[in-house]
Image (cartoon, rainbow, N blue to C red):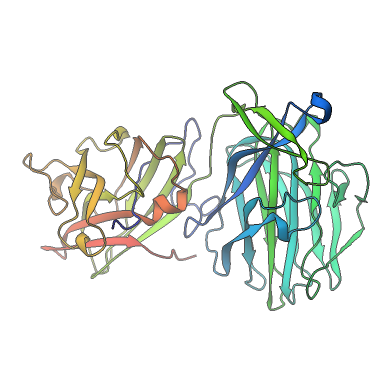
Length: 425
């Protein structure tokens, strides 16, 4: 059975990547989470007017903090979130426990209508702050939408560009204004009700949504669950799904909706670090995944006591995949793609067969253990690769967990296989 491995490459559909060394918008472990997408569709009550419809899609967020110990992703069910959440709709939340730390997660580029979310707490989280913001796809022009500050009995709205509502996604009652305290409820007073924020029309353009959790000094955990995000779609195929009433219940008629994206898919890259299995070789880089294109900028950091050259990078994707991967962009013309390559020379301890390998030219007989040192990525050097192909149903974190850079001429004359490992702050 194949283990989860994957790919690399770099280039972001018109988005200039930050310098690979920068920690401003990259993550330490490629931690991602996804939330359900809801859209406005046809077939409202009585067959007229738009209604919200579960779209069967998800919006991805990537943790972009340079170092994120204490961060974790968990699964949640809308049935546990209260009025305003869609019962039975599966989503994910982000939890953060490091005292006095800050964690940030950024969504892919999209056009937002409404946000429906819950703030949870465990332990002493007094003084913690939860902020939502938007930015453009270059990571600039940040605009804070609203902020809650955690108190002993609830979450107080300390800033916002417009009122929110509680337990009322129809936005007609239960308004939450600046200074209002939203009480915690549930076992031990553990969470807010579902809170809804509606975007101004002038903000319903292509932006990335950001979530920031700033911990206080207490020992505890603050979590945020996005029950769903209401996004704008236009054109494309016609989808259908359960209709959602203003209180979140799926009691509307089954509705149809447009599936066409109105924004280019631009997701934030994550920071990766690789450590040798048997030696001190190291590498790092940025990884992005946008539709059928994955891009990686990889740098050989083996410049200290241990040196080595990267000659191969193997990828073992989940599930059955067609051999349709193409190297569409590369800063090193010596590399090419080999499909279904046996994971020899140490890699077979983790993987049987790679779906594909980025391999540099070596006498026309490529193996994962082969490659030409003179054509590889030398200590201190970096290269960028973009690969197009079938990356459906592959998350950024899954992709990252399966990258296997191979080092040769280690110290010199040796070899090693590196795997994903924690980055240093």
